[in-house]
Image (cartoon, rainbow, N blue to C red):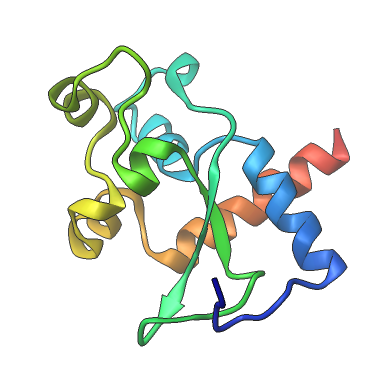
Length: 122
């Protein structure tokens, strides 16, 4: 599959790997709002590339999302209704409701950058 951003540079590939190995940014947004217990944050994610005009903005403009928040795949053993009640909407529920719930792409990208920087400093 070809994407508008081409192959990632070494730095971009490193960001993608680091993001995917860490926590879901939507889950963290719920924790920050006291809507999700920290132990329920999903670790190990997809990488969501932010878009502008339905075109990827570039590999550095992305953030980690768990399978639920990115692709609406429930965590093993859970129903769609339970996932929606506990974890909120998925990106597949619509961009507007997703961003109203978790923040703008730019806010989630900034949060992702902060998480990566904190993990590197540890």
